[in-house]
Image (cartoon, rainbow, N blue to C red; front, top):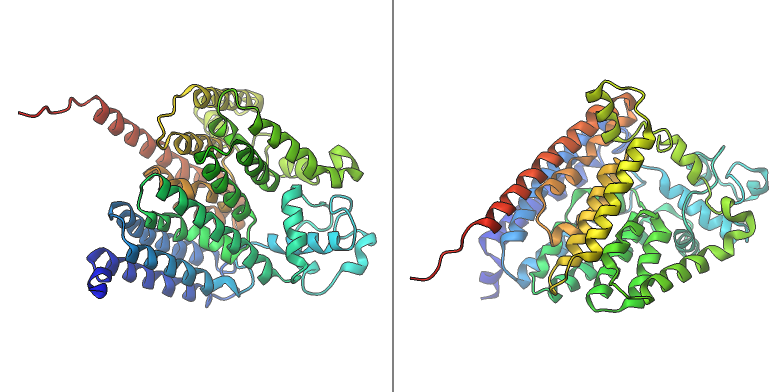
Amino acid sequence: MRFRALATPSNIALVVIGGASVFLYIHALDMEGGGGGETPWFIKLALTQGALYGGAAWIAWKTTESRSTLFIAIAFAVVFRLCILFTPPLLSDDAYRYVWDGRVQAAGINPYRYIPADQNLEKLRDTEIYPKINRKEYAPTIYPPAAEAIFLLTTRISESVIWMKATMVGFEALAVWAVMSLLASFGLPRHRVLIFAWHPLAVWEFAGSGHLDAIAIAFVALALLARRRDLKAVTGLLLAGATLVKLYPAILFPALYRRWDWKLPAVFVAATLFAYTPYLGVGIHGALGYLPGYMQEEGLTSGNRFFVLAAARRVLRWDSLPETVFVGLAAAVLLALGLWCLHRRESGGLEVITKAFVLATVFTALLSPRYAWYFTWLIPFLCFVPAISVYYLTAASFILYWLWLDSARIFSLNLALYAPLAVLAGVQFWVAKARVGRPQKTPG
């Protein structure tokens, strides 16, 4: 009987898809120079995994509650990560900076004070971590205080990149638990967590590269769970935690805030001030680390990297269209969405998650990141909102790794991401509106 419950058509299909995905994760490690060494080949492999994932996500969405399906989902999610967890980072060297920051703090030094190449840190250098730190000759750390605290705690166990990656996978597991708890609270099948746990972008960026976005995602998922349970102060604390890891989750504040609630904003502000206090020995500006330089380096201050602005300049044939116009319009859009979130009624359903999802997606699209891992925070929302457009965006974001070979192709790559996003979102919105407006049949 148990075998019959396990051997359903949907479960068999998931096992086949999971097995094929495992093969691809293992095969990726055979590439010369690792996943980043053969970028075009890796992109093809990752997009293939994305196509397989799409089939698995569709099955998870259509299948009713099943313990056996949940078991398959979790089991393969673990196997995917074990395939690449114990290898050096394949796509990014950010994890080496994480380990370095933890080591610097353990020596009693403010990580915002010196660049890694500074002579004051010479005694901390080694042959394993230091040579692989990016921007070590000119950039102090960019990461906010909560991230720095986690780097410190992790490196007190082991100053290794593998252990740092394991920490990120641990936070990802916490996010998976929070998503499952949220699904159960809404009466939705818990195995939909597969939509998050099987996503190849999450697997590669966390188990593969060890990006700290996994920490921010865990805090966001826990904040949504706390909001669901009406724990106002806890929600504020968790949202602050996410913001103090990656900054951009602060955009979710209007979705989580309940009118006339003073606890959430008070705790959010208090936690932020408390977290920054130990690092203010370098001054307020110094505690921002390399953030101002990073914004300039990535074209955020000039506006060169914003896809919407670049597209407007091409369509209008106005190359000097000021970036301030775009920034003003983007701020107006986000403000309007924030007000919509504050005034939209809640009926006890998925409204909060939907509002947070809309804010996160619009913000990310307006920001148009150059790095695939910036899209990972959208993935957990897909367990609740079947947005095909964002399925596409997250699965196709691997093409941004092509910028490592040719950074001049940023417009064409962004066009391949955001044009389908807009078309698919428009179609889905039109279909949803048509269904709402369709008259219901009456009995008899």
